[in-house]
Length: 139
Image 1 (cartoon, rainbow, N blue to C red):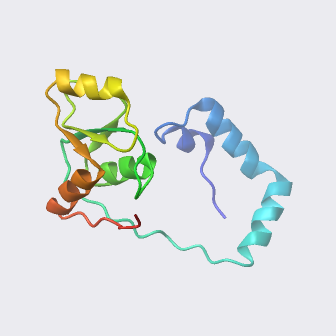
Image 2: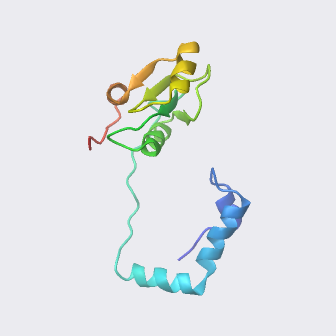
């Protein structure tokens, strides 16, 4: 099994020198290699089929509060897989603030000050559907 080099790992967004070193150390460990080999005897990993596209290209989303049908991380990943940006703070570049349950008041205030449209979770899902993005309805 081929694993990524430390340098390759560092090219992944959010992984720096220290984390890359820790990942390499984990996979270089003979004990961990034995455990992983044992697990692979019982499973057949398959590549995940992930829908991607550019339907949200140029759009920037900020999420606040709890979403009921997906985690905020899943929502951010969904936006990014479809060409959009998900950031943590509202600015004049933000296109939508998605406010779930118990949203942060400061983000809502910033959205109002910047004239950023605020959508609830249902409105976010409707926007996705309008853009032709399939939404898993787990909620």
